[in-house]
Length: 120
Image 1 (tube, rainbow, N blue to C red):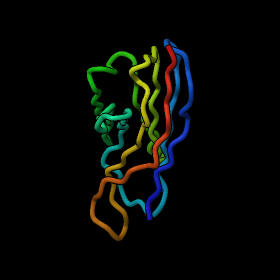
Image 2: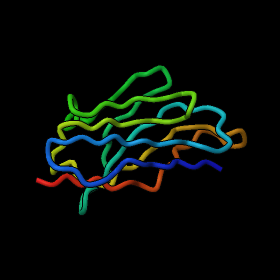
Image 3: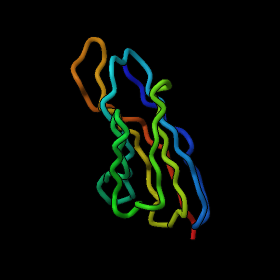
Image 4: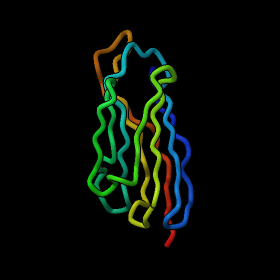
């Protein structure tokens, strides 16, 4: 089976930085894209950033210029560098991997989420 394990969340003051990591493990044959989504209390889950195998990135307008997504193919790991954090960035951040295992067709897998709290 596939596991996506996030780390790096926590409490930070406004203007500070955090770096999230997400490592995919299991019987992975190939990874198409990986990304980060977030869900604040009372709100729907929303896209934060994605990155494809060839490095094409996509960001939500609200994080452009502040967040950077990157990927280590050898480690099946995706990172999210978050700078100039704002209280409205407070949410549970979820890692997503659009990948294929040796026995299953492509499927979008999710991590368990990591809490990011930005204090004002």
